[in-house]
Amino acid sequence: MPKVRAASLLFAALTLAAFFSSCVREGGAIPETAQQTENEDTGDGTDDMTDALNTENASHGDETGSVLVTVGDKSFSLTLADTEAAREFAALLPLTLDMSELNGNEKYFYLEEKLSSRPAVPDMIHSGDLMLYGSSCVVIFYDDFETSYSYTPLGTIDDKDGLADTLGKGSVTVTFEKK
Image (cartoon, rainbow, N blue to C red; front, side, top):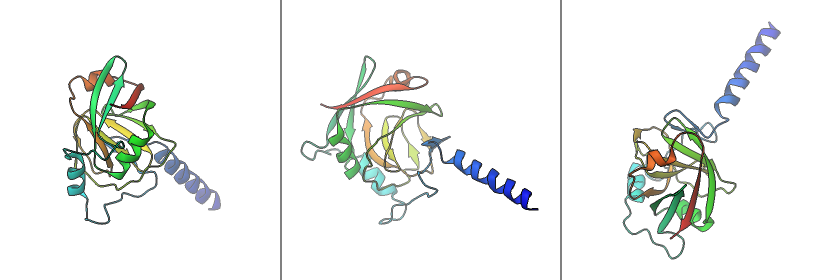
């Protein structure tokens, strides 16, 4: 009986380790811990997510505003969200990230720095959304889909034409710099 229990515990531990070892999984990112957090102040946080992504004037001095996103020879304009995480992200610029592919809809990279996060479930991810998963995983989405995962908005790419083709398959180098 002890050998069966030990084998079962080992199997469970290996399964959990594999489950939590990546930034993201099918349909969106996996939390850094086993939690799926909601916005503590406003319930599910959907209104906060929409407000942050739809902010027309997110300018806060030199720390937010417009960012140039470059992949190869193609550039996109990104408007930062009105979030503390977006201001902290902007303060790190310029950044060149080797972003990994996941699920044919997103690229992700773990920053060394942790950013302030106020995760909320957006219900719908849109092509061009730049999100923070957990406190250090930056994710660019290049396809629309429904999600039940929580993110903190960082910004959105203004003109998404050619974004999916530019990001392509596999890993890609992406440069973020202030305009």
